[in-house]
Image (cartoon, rainbow over all chains, first blue to last red; front, side, top):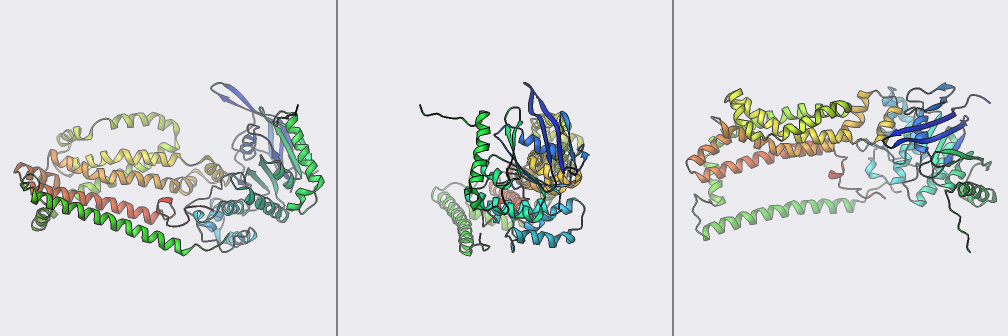
Length: 262
Length: 272
């Protein structure tokens, strides 16, 4: 196997707080391959945000190491795209300028990226919205723009922290399918953090199931679902059994409680 | 997912705005009318409460003197206010960047605000004489704090995701500040500027009360000394016009600079 895009080796992380140290993450091992889609699913407090900040080089492990393309992370990683739960669009910039802030901040030529920005907007169905301001868009549209912003500089790695968590159920389903299409076209390595089991399974090559406090990997499940994935994929026996598998892991770790009728 | 903004909503809102500002005009006229009629029917002597018509007449007949004193006061107000802007906003930006500096300086700044500026006005006269400087300084001191506080809140309320995003772009601190933090802080800054713009006039007038040979504050003291109540009222009117004018300038600047901000939007307030 070639060098992993992102490699976590025995990563531990604890924070010192007023009431003593808190262990956020314990012995986290994961190799994210080139072009691989990894979903990380887990309850609140399983250290997902900690993982995100360490993967982007804004926090560092207490022990263990993280490397990107074989190089150990010791400063903020710039060769990636980030999508948050909130779209974090700048209210004072129109759609196009919001996407182009990425190359601008990197000191790249803005004009060279404008064509690509327009292509990306077309890909997410926002052609003709270039001059609109964020407040004129719906939540789903805003999140699409933020995905374009994360892709414009063609990073090899995409970090997505519950990107659809703030959207309504229907928009969410739509966005999941769109994201899958984008991934098929661009084949970035993706780390996709979510609470939603179905979302995690539908998108991923591998689903990393986390258990809480301290966050540990409970199980890694390979999906082997055929591409392209569609809403109908969710009705296949394979998908249903994968979702059940994840749920069982949560039940085993007490994240989901089992009620026996007696 | 339609691209068009419904025009009917647009015009309806516009009409509503126009109507509401028109309403307040009617209300103001009605109040003035009630004042005029009340004073005349109640036979209130002009040296206690002159009717609005008399005040307006006086403003017109005395416009030369009023204008001269207004120019003096306006000069003090604008310089004091401008000084406060130039000092408060950069200071807030620096404090927001360096936590330890903020922790050290902030309590001192807050404590300094408990000193009533009106009370130190006479001291300023002793230190800086009777000219422009003490008035400018009082106007400055009175404006300084609200601008600083609002700007500081603005700079500090950048969501951590924004900073995170900016750092993932490899942007240096200066760029992060000018492209992310400063624009996001502008609505807060303008809130502070609006409060300060009305206070600036107060500051200058207080300075003139203490010691001056010109300016609306000085003229007001003289008018009061001779029991010229109509002139006093005329000056008060001019002073409030001055305050409103400064406020309007700040408001206009805000509208021009922040057309994207929620308080100025005419459409799309509800996100689908």
